[in-house]
Structures are given as structure tokens and as C-alpha cells.
Length: 219
Image (cartoon, rainbow, N blue to C red; front, side, top):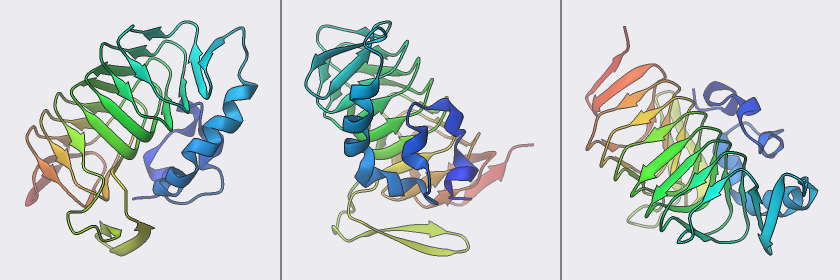
């Protein structure tokens, strides 16, 4: 339920090779930066601009003048980076994805058609195809006691060895407005999270998360 094969269609990201040979999606987090710096120079200059060192932007992407693109990053075809978006670096923004006003990204992979449109923070995370973060929803990527993150799967705890780990959202996940995804959250495909939720652990695919004691399978 928490493996790459359970969560993502790897044909829906320019970063498919980043996931090769790995079991869990958080295993890519330490390699996003180097992957971008390797892939970027191979991108077709007829299709991608190279406005700054370590930054590649598809010519048909829309980047508002007030957006900040920190290196390294790749902005794929058709993506929209809106006013005052803050891409701190080590970010891959997929085809037709939306990074909205005042959204901050750091060390992330956004698959194609992901939407983070309003006041989101997404750090040390992977968001699958067509995942959507409602306004004000965020990933919390460091535990308050600064200990290493453990993924709390119903079948047992999985040690990640990571201090920074936000959330892994499977394809088509919908996160309601003003929700907090706590460190080590993994949400299965096609699951919906109610607004203002505080989510932690592993949430099954095809579910509706109402609160921690009320998670129901979709009918």
C-alpha cells in the first residue's frame, strides 16, 4: 500500500527514471537535486529555455514575473507558475501542473497535472498524477521533536531514516482546504481528505478521510 507501484503511474512524470530500482517513494528524496542536474542538460533546447544555472523551463509553460525559480528545478510543458510562487529548489513540476500564488515548493516531485493552487507548502514530498492540494493545505516535513520519521503502516512501522519527510500522495488524491499532512503521511490513490483535517500515517486508497477514527471506503 505504500510502495511506488501502489501509488503512482510513472508514465505521468518526466522523472520516471528517478524512481527506477526503488521500492518506496521517499527513497527518491535524496536524489531529486542530482537527478535534475543530470536530466536538465539533456532537455531539447528547442523545447526548454535555460534562463539560469540549474533552471529549465518549457517554452510553453507560463511563469508569472513575480515567481521565483530557485535552482535546480525543471518546469515541464504547459505548467503554470503563478504570482509570488516560491520554488526554493530541487523541484520538478510536471506537465500542466499548477503552482499557485504564494505556494512554496522544496525538494519535491509534482507529477503531471498536479494542482497546488493557493497558499500551499509542499516540502520533501511526492504528489502523484492529478493530485490536488486544497487552499491552505500543507505538508509538515519535520517532526516537532526532530526525531527520524517512521511511516506507520497498518502492517507495521517502516523506518525511513529521514529527518525530513512530508507526504506521499498517490494519483488523484484530493486534499481538502487547510489540512495538515504530518511527517510520514502516505495517502493511497483516489482518496479524498476532508477540509481542516490533521492527517498522519497511511491512508488507504479509494477512501474518504473524515478524521482519524472515521475513514471509510468509497462505495
